Length: 438
Image (cartoon, rainbow, N blue to C red; front, side):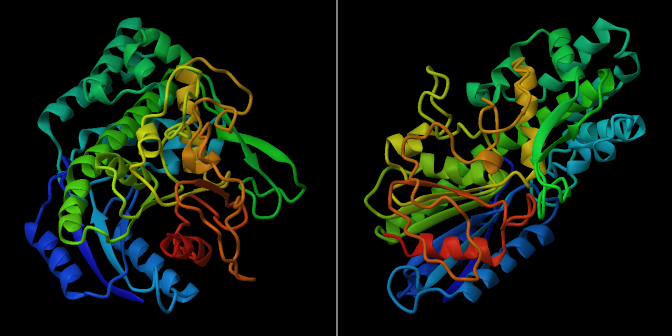
């Protein structure tokens, strides 16, 4: 059973907004002496608290519906629900006009929307905060739009203003963000000018909606300088969110859980994140010191590189969070859901391939150096265990055999319909068995 839940709100810098929320959590864990586990939930790209809390409520309801154990591990679960100022990374911005190559009006609108989102810098989830300095940089970028086709100076100024919004310390080879910051602006425009096709599944339940089977190339099929400008703004939004998710996890959530561990040193903790929340909880795990107390990780359609946990993914570099596994920060199972039905992750990450000038035919798939975790699972990760490879339906019921210290890539083409479909019973069934794994 769920013994209670506590919401904790964090600022964009990872600070606790209301210390009383932390006090209530810590007191609640102490008062509920028979709690067996602490489940930590982190939402992804949402605009307001209502979306985040609906996700949490639905997932908790699904978890109870699939049946927690009556006793032992995972039987009495306290829940901490993280609220943090993420931004909407809408599919309409990634695929204007539904992918039509002639959707120039939709592209222009999506470009302005993407830039307006970059202006906003809310301190808390749901705020409308706009930082004057950021707004000034974005306005300077907007002023270049009409000259982008004809002027190298306009393209350079546009890129420089967008880059000024970003923290260069967060660049990493696993998502081509270092190239994004370093490339000559005109070269960056050239690489983003062409269409970004993505190989998507077809057939019953497939993303392309084609019942004949096979596959289809969809995605962002627009070309030209304004399409490139929109992609640059979208990548900057991604970069901003990855930076923020890391700060909230590393600075805020890890500190709160450290305080919980001081009171309850052996309490099993299960970090569960959706979308950019997957990066948030992974950053949390990286910041927590290794311990013999159980710590697991569940990444639900995670919006970060599929090489994020990798060992020498290109023969030279480890993923940004390789230490989570290599240094045993997580000693429980790691669950990763992934599906080609996730258009948001499936289209967002091939942008990195364009930055790196990798023109592979099926951008974003598992062979692409810059695919997304929520599309392909954890790649080049030696801890991957092949004994569980599917996110199974609940009819018939299935009991997973998750092993501590191993990574389980669960393909969810038949059980997750899109990026946000992570609170259903199939997901809850797998999460239930993470909770009971020791």
